[in-house]
Length: 599
Image (tube, rainbow, N blue to C red; front, side, top):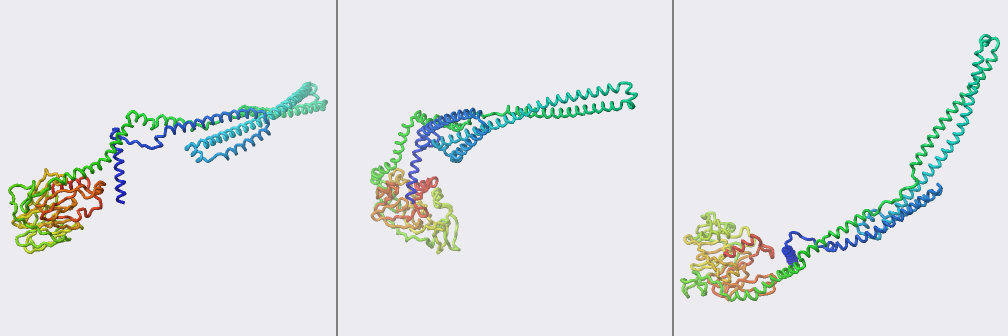
């Protein structure tokens, strides 16, 4: 899984690098979504627009034919009777039901339109036209039938009005004749009553004649009144019938015998989409990108970016080949670093003048015991222990304790950077102190004793505590090698030398061991934390090529040439970290700086 993650991580970083190269060459501050559908969009837009135009033309032709057929049906319906129109209505309703049965669901029709299924879309719209045609035909036949019914009703009203008018004329003549008879009888009666003899002798001589005239008047006038009342009733009925006829004529005038032959359009959305597709083809990304690419000479830029990308991919491997077969052999032939200080002798370019004469007695540094999780330090007369706070496990209750601010007042920055500040000082003959890592579960410690006149190179980060004479504080000296190729290759330009007499409590991940140089040893660059000052220190090329070429191993390893001296090796410098985990950012820069300054 770790290998797969590394492979995918490597591949992802290279792809991102290529994208950044293209953007840098084009000097563009945006990311172009480069997908197939977008690139082939204009051709697809034009193709869809052409298909839609063919469908639109077929629908327009069909709509025109149905409108002509609807107009012809209206002309034919004008000559049909109600019974014939009823038969036509039955046939039209059956045809509409069949068309409705062919209609698909709304979702299916919408899907055909979105996917531009030409056959299904054309059939759907043809069906809609058929349904609209039948609806219009049914509405027209219904309007024609309603008009015929109203025409028949109006004809009946006209016939009834004509018959009633004839009867009204006869009754009017009879009423006028009766009124004349009534007036004549009244005139006869009035003439009889005006005669003076009648007034004197009416009751005696002419009573019977007078009564006969009165009866004739009453009979004639009563008959005239009855005929007049009947005349008025007949006239009112005639007036009401005339009003009904007028209303029927008005309704008939406002009743259309057919419908508008123009069918509603079923191509509005199709025409809108045709416009959208053509606009998309003209202003599409592909058209704009093609113009943009021609202006910026994109093809040439892409070729340049491809060459740059290939060069960047190959550069690390080319550099590794150069370093492995050219740089590393050259460095191996250069003289190693040998620090000649009191406590060690040697020959070479690093030997300063005025030191011990060749053949002087060299103090022997005894190998340290096997490291353990803790060591017990028993102080002798005139000795004191200085220990880190996080390595002071237990101490005597009666001992004299104080604080020392720095490991060495001449190296305050080194003391601060390596955590050798605020050291606990313990004094007292015979007092025992246990030194052990309180917080680091992987750390082990051991004691390395430097006798009088001896010295060793040591990275202060590996120092947990030390025992020194009260009247002879630990002496630490700095030695720079700015003009040594080996120093630059190992990125360690300064070496700190610890001088005896002193007992150093050295710590390390999963333990620390000391071993003699003998015929020379090779170590990983993180493992060697110290060595005797008289040994020659240099670098050598890693043993195998392919692990280095593939980035699994570093190019150089530390090499100590044969000689009389000890090597201080940390067993597992990466203890406590996950496999392959490296420090990055500020933390990595701090670690690199500490290595440069020998800390």
